Length: 603
Image (cartoon, rainbow, N blue to C red; front, side):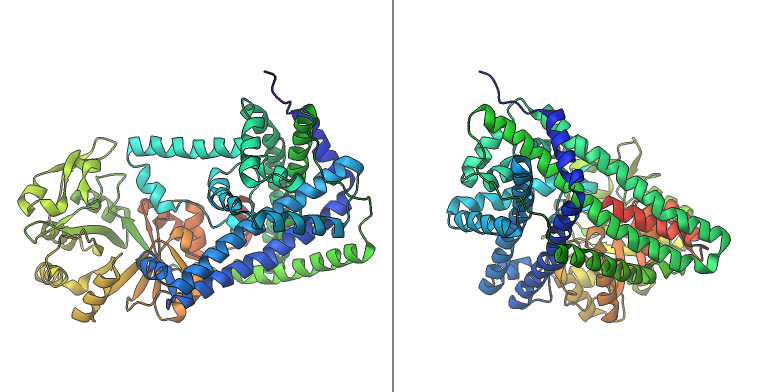
C-alpha cells in the first residue's frame, strides 16, 4: 500500500515564500495573534489560577496544600475551567495560523472577519463534543513535554521540575527510562503533528484528527523531523544573529563610554525583545504554512481536499498603523522595564550552600562530602536527616537504601547500629559509611562549618521526634549554631512552637498563587518556581529566599545579581568562584549577555 506523500522541500519552500513575500501582513498577524496570547490570554489564565487558589481558602497551592485544594469544589471547578481555557486558547492560536496558511496557499488572501467566523464555528462545534476533552492532555501535557516544533507561551510553565530530573539521572536505570519516555513523547508529537491543522481545516472530531495524523505520519517520522528542522534550525541561527546584534552596542559602550552602558543595554534588550517576539512569530507562521502545505499534498493524494478558503484582501492601513504604534510602545516599555534588572549588581551577600555536601568529592550526606564542601568554601552544608527504628538519627536523603547501598530496606526499619554499619557508594565508585547525626555534627563543629539540616519525614517517627532532634543537636553542638528546613508544614509548625528562637525554612518544590502561609523564617524555592516577582513577594513578608538546586553558572549569576539570600548547589566550588566574579562587576556586557541568553532560550 502506497503512503501519502509528505514533500519536504516543496512544503518548506511554500511555507517561507508565503510568509516572507507577504511579510507586512505576516507581521500584523503575529502582532495580533501572539499579542493577544501574551497580553490577554496568559494574564487571564494566571488570574484564574489565582482565583482558584483563593477560592480554596489558600494563599498558594503547594505540595503540602494540594490535597486541600482538591477538596475545594469551587477552587477545583475554577482550575478545571482554566485547563479547558488553556486548551481552547492553544487550539485557537494554532488554528488561526492554520486558517491563514491554508487561505494563502489556496488563493493568496484572507480576511480577519472570515478567520474569526471560521474559528468561532470550529470551536463551537468542538466544544459541544465530549470527545474534544482528549485534546486537553494532548495540548497541555504531551505537546509541551514532547517539545516538537515551536511552542506557546501558554505552556512555558509546563515542564518536569529540575529537582525531579536531577534525582532521576542519579540512578542509571531511571535515567535510561527517563530518556526513553522523553523520546517517546517527542515521537508521539511527531506522529500527531497534523492534529490541529486537521481540526481547523476539516470537520473532523478530535479522535478522528488524532487518528488521521497518526496514519499520515506512519513511517514518515524522518520527513516530519525534516519539516520541523527546516524551521527550527533557521530559527536558532536567526536568534543567535539577533543576540549578537543586541550585544554589540553595549560591548562598544563598555569600552568607550561606560556611563552610557545602562541606557544602551536597556534599549538593546528592549529592541531584542520586540525583535524576538516578531521573529519567533514569523517562524511560527512558517511552521504552520509548511505543515499545512504538507497536509494539503497528503490530502490531495487521497482526494480529500481541505475545506477552508477565504477571499483575498489586503491588511487595512489602520490595523497596520496600530501594530507599528504598539510595537514602538512595546519597545519603550520593554527598555524601561529592562533597566531595573540590568542595574542590579551582586552584593556578595548570597550564601552558597553545598547540596548534601560536595558530591563531586564524596558520597552525598557523608563525612567526606562534608569535608570537601568545607574545603570548597561553602557557607553552609545542606544535609538530610531521618529517624531510625530505635529513635536515633542518621544522614540519608532517600527513604530506602536501594540507590546508594543496593539494599531493599528503609532507614525507618533499621536501628542506628544497623544503619551506620552500611556502606554507601556513588556512581564514581567512592564509598563511605552512613554517618550518625551525632558523628556528623561533631565533625562539622571541628571544621567550624554551619549546616542547613533538612528534616526528612518517612512516616514512622516517634511522636516526639522533632523535640528529640532538637535536644540531640543542642547536646552536641548547640541547635542555634545551625539552620533547618523541611518539606513538611507540620514539622515547621512544631519546630516553631518548640523553639521559636531557631531558624527553620519551608521547602517549596511546586507553587501556584501567592506566598505560602507558614511561620517559617525563609522559603526554599525550586529553581523553576523562582521569579523576581515571587522573590519580592516573599521578601515583603519578611522571609528570606533560598533557591535550589542551582547547577548552571549562568543561573548562579542571575540569582546572585538578584541578591537572593542563598543558593543550594551540587557545585559549591563553582558557586563560590562565580560569586567572587559577579560581586561588584564592572560594565553591563556580562549582565546583558545573560539576559539575552535567557530570552533566546525561552522566547
